[in-house]
Image 1 (cartoon, rainbow, N blue to C red):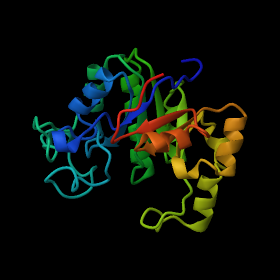
Image 2: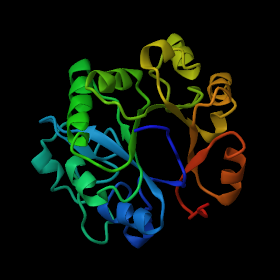
Image 3: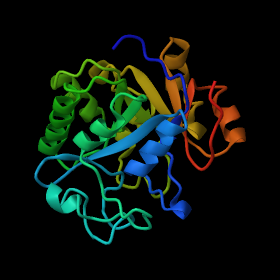
Image 4: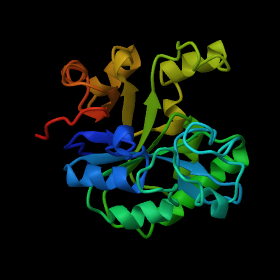
Length: 252
């Protein structure tokens, strides 16, 4: 796909507004982002019967009336779950439906969510790669999980793939991550294995030495999750583009 160009702000999970009934990672949020001239960040999970679908959380609880892990239901049941507070009664899309909706109209920054085991990790990577072989629009892929980056390469992906990262020192986020794993992830020491093409970094972690080094060497960096013009100005001192929500940044 050539050089990575993040030429416009990236709407985090689409241009969503829960008060207005436009829910994150929904059809209407993606359409609003396109209409606003923005790129789109979205999240991909894997159903119980191994089909990728658009959803962020590891459980259904926050965004639907269902309970339990987001990988615990077959795709036919997933696509019947109404997203809470959706004005249009929208339901999670299959990954293939998202691609059909966007149809090349803007850049997709596609995040693959960490899976529970090696089989599901490989299955998600190969399923996403297979759908993207039939897609003609611009896209990049990314994940917090280095193993998903490796799996995407094994699945034949030649598009840019990024690592999503931060300081790995957050209470409530990192209680199950050991010291050694956190050290490796924080310092991007998986580079010889992953060979990522760009970095997507939390804004408060842009000063991490590894992030600064890779950017100094010419690697693109996007920064999340930016919620105000002031926060955007600060992030863009150390990043090339923002992943935003809760406001509408200017383009260009």
